[in-house]
Length: 126
Image (cartoon, rainbow, N blue to C red):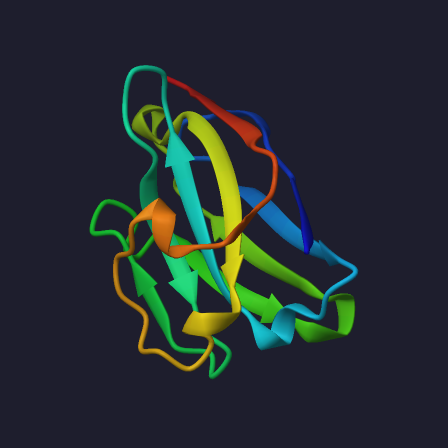
């Protein structure tokens, strides 16, 4: 299972970015997908997740601003990030796990996901 995260960049506070997690050699509609973020010196923290039924869960800090969704035709999972704040600056990772595909989503630890993509950097300027 290979995951490719993309879409990061530099944006001003209040702006938007759209991150994508693409699957290679795997059909993502069989996997629960989670987005995590990490800043230097801090642990990797959960941002949002979605199971194969389309149920979603968000960290309190991003509720109402971020939306996670599937585009099965493109074999991707998208994290739409609106009203970005400087504190959203981080390296963002997507992760996948087939064992969680039907499980109701909730905040999960990184070690609950088996497969990871490389990070994509999001920088929000004030």
